[in-house]
Length: 150
Image: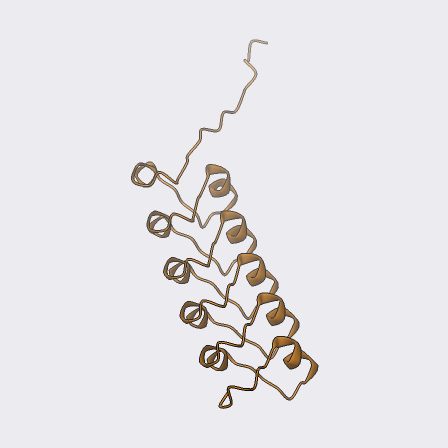
């Protein structure tokens, strides 16, 4: 990192267990790009949300988070970083992600439907929330019942 002529890639790191690349190193060297695939294959690499926000070369998606327990993405992180997109499907599959109505209203990338709400007890959408946020769609679930006289 002190020598600009040296470029370390993830492939190099994976082939040599003695090389450990941290997020701090990546941030100081624009030639280093770490992708989620690299993270998943190498347990020595740990990326936090703080690192993501400071480095535009790092992009973490929910799919990556679900496969890697070392990555934790919260709604606060998503709101500060446009590269992070969290969907309801992701939330349902990952208990580490909690999305509240307040988060929804501040972030246009988050869309919650009634179906999502019904399957996930952590998500609560009220009519007031819907009125303030056009991205929230609340549908009416109709349950047909056979009349008793038939």
